[in-house]
Length: 359
Length: 268
Image (cartoon, rainbow over all chains, first blue to last red; front, side, top):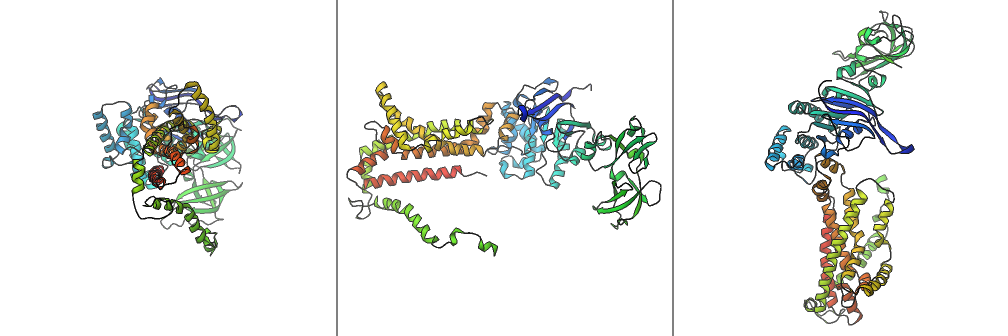
């Protein structure tokens, strides 16, 4: 990458406690986030995503490694000397200050002239559409409004980097969707690099330029949403993002031999130069599996259950060896898929939709 | 039906009578002293009509005036000193990482609540007696120092309660928004803990104003506070003047404690 990274972690490691009680929250993570990117750290709770965020903000000091912001090593700098602002999960708005005073707090602390503070506060409140609330106290606002104040407060000092720690988790579904597009808009309009932490895969896929999937204190995969979804590098990523069918088997000359005995054709890309004979797992998304009538060419299977989801219907089908495959079909206008448990069907796994994961 | 069978104190026999008796025990003596402070008669037990005479007498009594000024002076200074100490102690024990011996520190700060006051009084008497001999100083300083010491836990408890209820992420947010440690304290921590500090100061003031035992032991000659003056009066001829002073003191305390409860109520 030729461009200067907005933020970089170099072998950042964080251990809490000491001696036998020591717990590594983050394992030597190296990561570069480009200027102007909407970057998401995605993973289940305890995966280290919040720890990494706190290392970047300066609330924690890494046990090992370095944090660079705009190319400068800030590892030893306290949070107040880093050009970074944070939107906290709990918002952390100052209850004794008005909305306008909250938004102006950062600029005030930077000793900006009063007139400039006032102008920027007005601009920020307009950006998050809260002009009318300037003289209210945070406790007089709804959750969504408090969220927007927290955003305005963090954006007002024009940080090089905006860190967002699960900011939408406290909002209800409808408000969350609204804030997702609001965040995208703010990022486009300000051009500030956003580092967003979430455990919600849908949020990560819809909003981000790139996503880092984390687990057990390590980064499992970094890539654009489509890459993460369609080309997961391991079973954890395939399982955590969306739904996936996993089938055991081994690689052969002509493709992938399933435990049931059937042979699945692989693309060169999916095979990735793996030698024949190696045991591996085959992964395919439910919406990519093709379902045909019994007796057609493909994998013979028996329907065990159908589950209606509204737009989709999931068909659970059992292969000869007992392995279950879920097929996602669009529900027909009648809502009746016309398959009852016990029906014989044929499954086809298109070569371009099949992934091979090492065991 | 399950609802009706739940244990309820108010459904027990004699509940009403016991409640009334308890409240009578608590308030009847106070009501009597307040009523008799307006008695026109010389006696403290015979009613002779309504009058403000004893308030007037107390007001004009030079000894009462001096004792009042002394009481207010000692209470103000003791409240100020103990509040500063208690604020520092509360910040030290609630903010920052837990340290070994923190439980011991809690107990140490609250020592004046646990040690019998008479023991502390005797100990102070002995210590101050030798200090007085060594330095020759016999001023109000001893009284102020002793009051400051036993007022610390009363100031500490409401301040600590306030700090424990404070969202620590607010200080993190201030640091994130470029505030130095000092400015974080000035602009965020202090304003948010202020109601607790004010409540602590008021409680300390009231406790100091009311103290008899330690004051009686520590004071030098001619250093009567209002409570020790009243005690001295009761040893001689008892006049309704004491009732009047008691009622005035009660009024002041009720005002301060009401303010204390209003301040320590959780703001939402």
